[in-house]
Length: 303
Image (cartoon, rainbow, N blue to C red; front, top):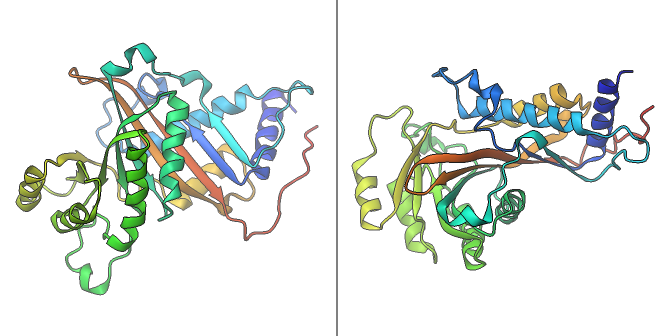
């Protein structure tokens, strides 16, 4: 077996022992692989995410030591990063930079918020996020809602949102986040959250892919409550469980890839304040392995 094959085998076995995988793409702004898409108008954020995940895994596999004294031990939490794309934020420049995060969560567990915030803070070596917007899980519409459903917006179940929002408020209380917001809330849902919340949403990011204008009632309410309206073109589900499972099969040859499900994806953007220049951008993904498939891990032997 070649050295490349040996490293791939180490990666496969390490993955088989893990119950959680965390992938950090690093800074993708100057990534050569993305340059091919520069003039590709149909490129989506999902395309960007998948390409950068593949690059991160390839970089990680290439960095695995084959020295018998230094072969990594299997861990329940497998941390994968693109060592070639690290872009730490210089503490001396932190005040001149704005760090914004959009967090896609795949279920309603409030603890995912704190896990994601802690992970971004650790990977970027910062003390605080300037803004955090949450894209909540997609809820299937009821029969009554179906005829009026905006396919680009989730159906908002406020009773599920409230515990998650309380966790968001705790990140502000602890000083780790300055501003918190939501994605794809219509005027009624945003009003309900605003009236209930102790710390009010300051941002609402909405999808205009299939719409030509922001609804007037949403504009008026946001103006009255000083809520910033932003736009995006993300798909309702940026990465499906099935797509991620296919990725794990292709990138790592995980024989039990169907047991993996994404828990959250955090996309961060660092801008130079008052200039609009992008300093860095990247993705952090966390996925969990379902534990109901039995123990299918392998003995830790490679050669």
